[in-house]
Length: 131
Image 1 (tube, rainbow, N blue to C red):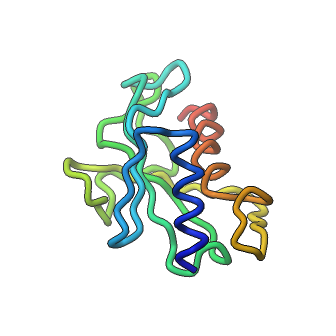
Image 2: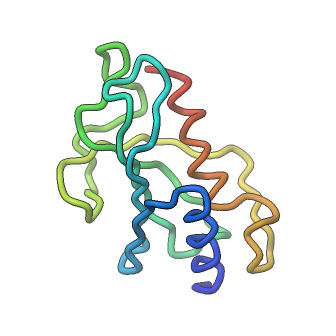
């Protein structure tokens, strides 16, 4: 459903203007994602892969550059280095995370229901949990 993904990526760009999208593998990188207090660094890139069966299959997990810590601790549900590395260079860690109750619309209109924007903005929820 490439039409849906194209619309979703454009919608993401409205919220994250410096977003990088690689159609090969359907990878997204959001540079300079601001993190809540306690995280070092305070700003980092975040990357994720859009699943092949999207939107019926929700995205799962997201990547950050290796070395991210919360109050000096390695976060829970986090693997470093990640077993799969995003195609953006450097070493990445992986947060095992999802949005509960994923319910996208059946149409190619991502404005209604869950979308990649709600997915990407949801990372803040995980970061607010701390370690």
